[in-house]
Image 1 (cartoon, rainbow, N blue to C red):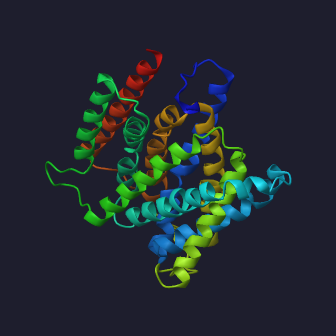
Image 2: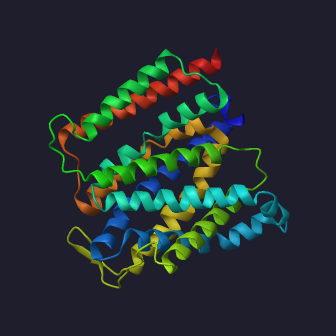
Length: 315
């Protein structure tokens, strides 16, 4: 597979990939804090994520058409891939994440979601026979211990909703799917086209589910509250769509195609740090001390996983 190559850290390709990965992490990291202001104002998770994806699709519509350059057959030939990408990666993943942060802190939900790099390693092992080495296995154990601490299962001190944990786990599965599918560099669809088409499919899926009553699409024009500050509802909606959706997905796809799913999923862990930063700035949220320790162990575990996989690739 293209994403299994060992990248040289000094190569222009890797430098460009790291730049796109950082842009993706920062923009994705702001989504939870922005969305929570809308949720507190009375928006349901389904309404917030639908508004985010619809705006993102509209923002990328013209750039996507331009990048396609009249090659509409590419969409027809990759219709199944685009539909799967749009429904699972954009619609299900973001709905699950927004449902999680409705019930728990942004940082904790994101730390659970970003067990995804380990899931990517497991998938590559089961699907492609790429068995992880000792260092990779050790990283998985360390990340698992970190998850126990993030959930504060030992002392029971964290106020976590079990359904919120379930939603965050589903978001983790969707996040892993994003890295695996986006890594297909041999796909002829340009990144901005894949992002635009995927968001369009996700929008249609969510709007359809809302129209038949499967999802609660309650929304309001009440101001969104961030700490002690109120802003007009349309400001976070535009921010969610243009910044945390259109920019995030486009830069994320470019990063994964340049770096491969493993390295890109590792760099994407920086989204956790950005999310904690934005949650602190916008909402005044910080995890408790033991959850900070757990988060550090999760990051350390995933670093070990990546180092182990890289050593295997070199061998």
